[in-house]
Length: 120
Image 1 (cartoon, rainbow, N blue to C red):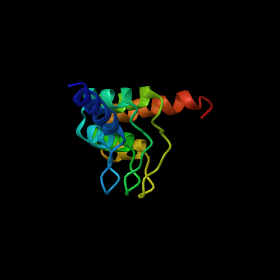
Image 2 (image 1 turned 180 degrees about the horizontal axis):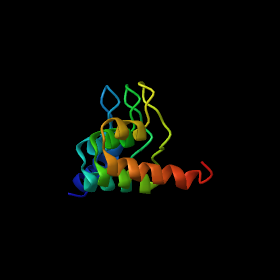
Image 3 (image 1 turned 135 degrees about the horizontal axis):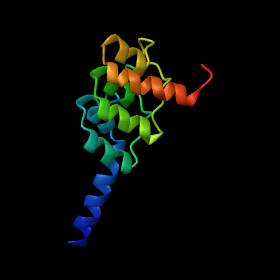
Image 4 (image 1 turned 90 degrees about the vertical axis):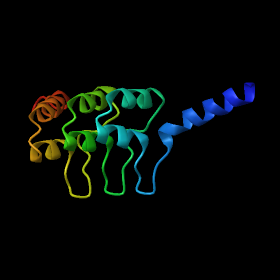
């Protein structure tokens, strides 16, 4: 029984670092689907929030594009998500939130940009 428990822990701990052929990690999937609790568990387990899909998308870009405020907030508050990163379409999370008219996400990201550089 001890080996099974140990093996299960190894598998669970490796989940945050798995990725698909397109570069999607569990954090990307959770962000895209707006699964904030799952995303928090992945962050706690060491998920890389700077990982890029083959389209250059971060979990924050995906959450913002889908309009998931809670998930975007969780990514932003974690401190690991970079607001300024652009995807292959040369768009940031803020650009996508604006294009998709997700006003609450735009406000969150604008506040984050202002906090990073109050002189803007």
